[in-house]
Image (spheres, rainbow over the protein chains, first blue to last red):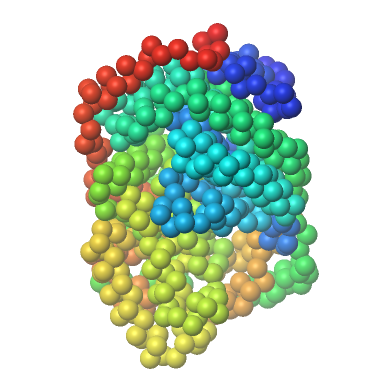
Length: 294
Length: 294
């Protein structure tokens, strides 16, 4: 790599600040880089090792009591590329260190409880990187747009969400909230692509079009959810996602950066290394009835 | 690749048959290939795409009702390379298609139930590839060697295991049981390696040496468990594992072969593709208040 892929700190460019306007974000842009698809894919592969090493340290230190962990909340319109983020970024993690939770439409039992009832048990444990594929934000997005809950209940939820996120952050959860932002034209192209390829038919959901026609209402709901819930301990990042290669490289870099802030380290152990070595060595001379070494 | 990595059908070479003797398996051998570490690592990378495609089809067809799935049971002595199999073979799968279950020493609640009580809920659902990292076989391995259960209870368990495996196989679970087989000399080398590297200290478990000195009893318990439970619907494969590159490539090939036998296919969908395309196209002209395409 003669040239650096990131020419600027992409995490700062994409981080939501006071006064944020979703309508001013261009889904086709690629902030922080002047590179192309090929370079983006190379960057994604190149940084996998960096991501894994940070994850392994985070996991290792939890074995001796550290409580830090990461929760990535992923929200987007349909066909915006959530699946690709899972399969190309989070698939780079060691399986034991990843806690994946996909939240579908709530079941009857889930609807009978407060909206956070099904969320709380899925908060990742110490040492893990959790990914919420959709989340408690559905309860102020589709539920608002569709009127599944009355306005005063939706209003109550913004406060409940910020209380909830403050509480888990205090317990050692580093929260990273990401909106993948595609344009409606790009969404249409992707839906048509799925319909044009029999190997992708199973990914097509007729219900996606019902939500698609409510696009402006969804954008308003995203705007409101983001401005009501962004905070230093629970930042939002809005990632332009018309270019899949850009969105993947950007999400990878955001996760790496948050892991670096946690600064995990190889843990010191509480056993006597020399004594353990002597114990293992004392068992070397035993004769075993196997053919090993033949 | 000018030369084929596998010169023979490795899955047939490693499959347990009547009359199997664990003591005749050389943990340092590499049956089915004459290649070396470098070629083994290349083979592992090369076949990732084949594995993923089969997995994706298996997952896709389950969305329209197919019940097939795969359960890989992984057993081994400590430091035999289970973690490496997870991180280098199963990490190649799409995260949503993998159901990972690690069975540690049973909790007090688990001990209060039948030994299969904690196993049953972890059997993978349709479309998934499940991995049991340790399993119900611990209940006839460490439990036998350590005398944690009386002989008549251990004896009962062999029958309970074969009944259980027959039942889930009848429900569409393709069972693949794998023993990673290292020599005691190789285990000692790996334990000393962990003790010699501060970045690996956290992986060292002093209890492993307590089990290590019982090696012959463990080999007897493995022999017995394997001969009592291998069956056409629930085969055992004993994989020589002194060479990590060999064990990983062999396990990958075993899983690919079992997936090929299931022969998953892209599912036919029940919606009208042309009508859906027309629905999407009818929404193309709507004007959206975004800056996309700018």
